[in-house]
Image (cartoon, helix red, strand yellow):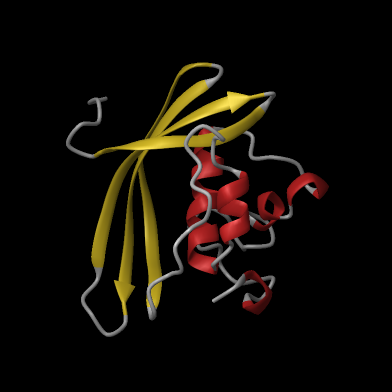
Length: 141
């Protein structure tokens, strides 16, 4: 699925907003609509970007020190099924962590879970994804 194929009143893939148009679409639109106001909003918009195949957005919101040159193509039949935010911590105004579980399925296979503890940094007023640590290594709340 891609953003163009998504109806404006369709639920947002991130599960937060009433519709994609009123939720993550504004961050995906970039400078026309502004930037995600906090790390959780950025993380949710990145989940939606994965679900919609918006690889350019993913690279644009990745910290330049950790950003890959390009993203590998999605596995054929990959479908993102849902997102659950477990925790959003901001120890200071320019650093934050978001722990989440994302569910996905590849082809006709069984649903799987990705548990991640992502770290974000704000540079020049803009939140960026920095990196992730495994769920086992993530600090407890």
